[in-house]
View 1: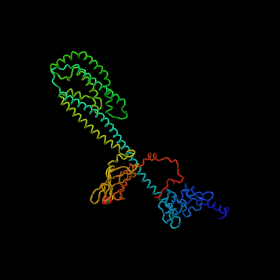
View 2: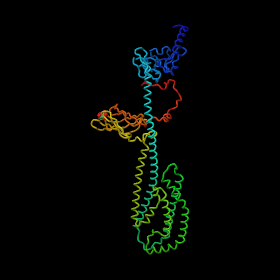
View 3: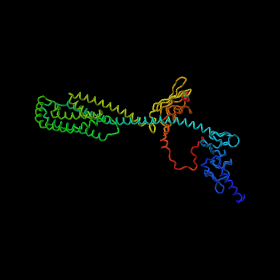
Amino acid sequence: MAPLRYTLPCILAAVALVQASTLRGVAPEQQPLYTPHSDGQWECLDNSKKISFTAINDDYCDCPDGSDEPGTSACPNGIFYCQNEGHIAAYIKSYAVNDGVCDEACCDGSDETSGLITCPNRCKQVAAEYAREQAALHKIHSAGILAKRKLIQQGQETVTQWQEEKSKLEDELVIKRAELDRHQREIDGLEDDAKRHLSKKPSSKKSKCPPCDIATLRDHIQTLEDEVETLVTILKDMKRDHNHNFHDMAVKAAIAGYDDFIDGYDELKADINNDLNNYNAYDQSAFEIHDNESEEENVEVDQDTPEQAGKVSFVQILLKKIANVIPPDWRGLIPLEKNENNVGLKSEGSALEAAKNIHGKIKDTIQEAERKLNTINDDLAKDYGKQHEWLKLKDICTEKNEGEYTYSVCIFGDAYQKSNKDGARVKLGRFEKFLDDDHMKQIYSRGTKCWNGPERSVRATFECGGETEILEVTEPEKCEYQYRMKTPAVCPIPEEVNKEQPIATHVKEHSKPKNVVHEEL
Ligand code: MAN
């Protein structure tokens, strides 16, 4: 071994020489990693080994990670950096260095220095071609982005309509179910009455009941008055709580009607009370007469008394007034029909029939509303992309002639393969789901079973384009089809791309430079 006083100057001279020039095959920002220690040693980038700094790029692979031979083909796992001045820098696998072939990715020809072949610097032409491609791509993207914005807007509008329709249906269902319950109670009551009448024994003594009937009627009137108050409160709450931004004409009309109504309401109530007081003063004698008459004529106990007729008609005026101002769907809440029916119907049989008829109609309306609501809920639960950008593409169909077959797909529907010879059509699958969070891949599955193979299926991958079309169809595995497609739905909208871009907080020491093209490494 030579004495240190002779070897050290040599090493330092070599180090100075290497440092002065850039190391072949290493990106500029990684050059500092190739600095020797003071003893002339250098550590492999994976820290697995120390070797002499002079052993770098000596065409012999020392480091397990291949980091000591960035500029030769000595390490099977090494990578080579080409600067490609004037274009975009690139990495290639180091086995392609000095192999006698000009590498596509290294347009500067720096991969071939052995003299086996001379690679011209093509970076100027490559950069120009790249710029043309980028301009064309930019044009496609601009058209696609414009179309995507429209898709988002239309999708959002449809979702809003669905949500409005859903809340209308839910309101309608609450009202109709309450109405149904009320009619059910009415039917039960009429059926009970019918049973009671059937079992009633004829009595020789005439009923002395008018006073107790009056009490019942007072109760009924009180109930009706309470219902009027409830409706007034409902309307008052609606006026106070309704969504002012939601321009529902029925609600607006109801509020306007309520305002008109409430104007004269107190006055009307005062009139009614006044009239009722007059009736009260008069009713005793009137009932005595009526009672006598009823004894003589065997009048049914549930016929209208003057008090009932007077009071009910006032309440009816109120109810009718309210019915005129509230949305049509709510009118079923008002017991108008019931009273009119009861007054007008002479026999319990026909009243029962009418009540059942109405009940059946309400039930049908409820079933129809439930069916519509289920459809809307199903639609709202479907995945139409982060901004509903896929929604308006539903059922958009497109096809592509690929020689032997014409392939087709309806977005969110079915995919088919049709023979161009005999027109025979085979189902390749039905839309199942998106395969990724970015909504750029879909799978259509459960197609016609392949002879001796799986059920046919289609994987569709989408790239940005102004229209939704099939670009190419392949069948890499038997009965498993790949559709390469384009659509505006996947175009990158600039604001969103920026939003999604994570902010770099830490740059890895060994990270590769940006704007670098990596060949399939
Ligand atoms: C048909 C077509 C083909 C498929 C074979 C499998 O010919 O659907 O795409 O590969 O059946 O038997």
